[in-house]
Amino acid sequence: MNAADTSTMHEKWTEPMQITVHTQSPEIAVVQLQGRLDLVSAGAVKQKFADLVAVGQRRLVVDLAEVSFIDSTGLTSLISGLKATRQGGGDLRIARPTQQARTILGLTTLDRVLHIYQSVEEALAGY
Image (tube, rainbow, N blue to C red; front, side, top):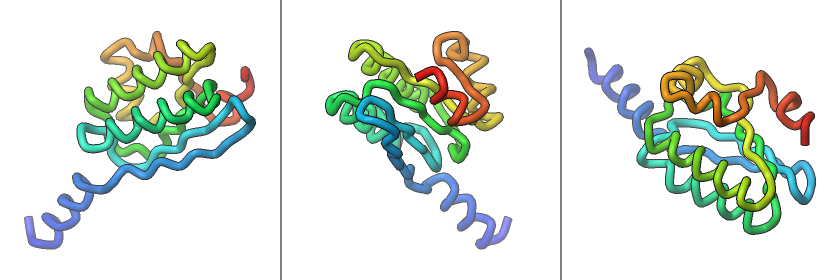
């Protein structure tokens, strides 16, 4: 492995999580995540879900199409968001999960708890 490979690997492992919120209505938002959903970023994601629910956006679609990796703390942030939305009378849905995300959701059976959709539009349709 040369220095360029090591630098690229380091950038991949330390890339910051990008969180973008697309408001659909006063109660509905699409939360687009980009990067690694792991120990480093899970707290910020969990806080973003709590902040959205606090202002009345209790129906969330989380777009995972650009999430390169999810670990156990990342899963915990998704479950925290689900709990917050449901306590507020809403729901949290997953859209466009990557293969790695699908695998970890399946292995942990969280795919039975979190509603998973092929597209953001499909996830929004029931709201």
